[in-house]
Length: 71
Image (cartoon, rainbow, N blue to C red; front, side, top):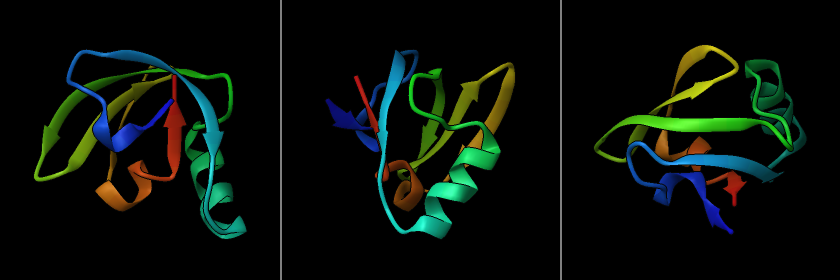
């Protein structure tokens, strides 16, 4: 298990855990990042990510991406 920020482009993964403060976890949950959801990394730039999850593409900062643990 690794933080999403360290995943490679094109990698498909399963979310195992969302960490951080309650407000951060709620924000990610609202965006569709829930435990058990599948996602893939579309691109990376300066540590920031574009992630495809539940049919949508979402940009995440490196800070938020480190809060998401994948398998």
